[in-house]
Amino acid sequence: MTVAGTRAVVTGAGNGIGRALATRLAADGATVVVNDLDGGAAEQVASAIGGIPLPGDAASEGGLATLVDQAHDRLGGIDSWFANAGIDVGRGLEASESDWALAHEINVMAHVRAARLLLPEWLERGRGRFVVTASAAGVLTMLGSPVYSVTKHGAVAFAEWLSATYRHRGIDVHAICPQGVNTRMYDNLGNLQQLVGRDTVVEPEQVADECMRSIALDRFFVLPHAEVGRYYAARAAAPDRWLRQMNKVQQQLEGRAS
Image 1 (cartoon, rainbow, N blue to C red):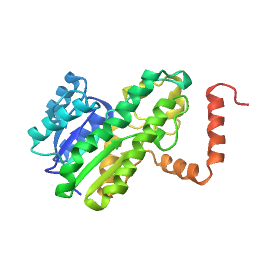
Image 2 (cartoon, one colour):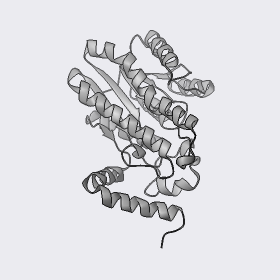
Image 3 (tube, one colour):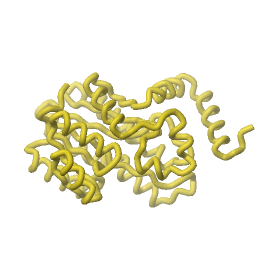
Image 4 (cartoon, helix red, strand yellow):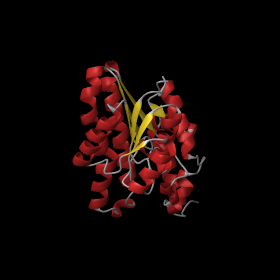
């Protein structure tokens, strides 16, 4: 698989993993639409990589419809969609109803809405690529953050459903599931940094590199941290043991470990 000559849209591309994905795609010869709510950041990244800035909302029905229409007009078509925009809000059971609703809109429904708009044309031509930036929290869990855990599980589940349903019709789907990545989101984790970064904190560029490798190898999961694959297997093989171990980590976070 080569991305040279293809047309890609990357949401949340003004910084972090999104910026790294857009940069790598452009370096490999793709024409890239750079989307972000921060218009200045989108303009800056697009200027640096020779891309097309289309700032704006990439979650709501109206925002996505506008983005898809504008990208289609500027590119002449869309070959791949990198649904990277995401949010981490709320902590514990105290997370508000508005936190849950916002995270569901951005971390789950944005993917559903984008797929609704993109799939009809992709199915007609028999090819298309949908890449979801999820998280290790989407295949494991994120202690301290039920909102993030649940919505990222939803993102992975939707990506799995897309792949299982449309793989035979030329639709390639991938889920990026890293642990600690040196981004603004990681900087804002507070005491949860010790959990997320307990193995290795990687750079966004390493995530982009692993994404391109996984695409080339037709792998659904993009795992910049190899440990995540092992944890995922252990969780499936012995869920009660895994939950006991996770509870021990929770006790450590609370400072109550013996």
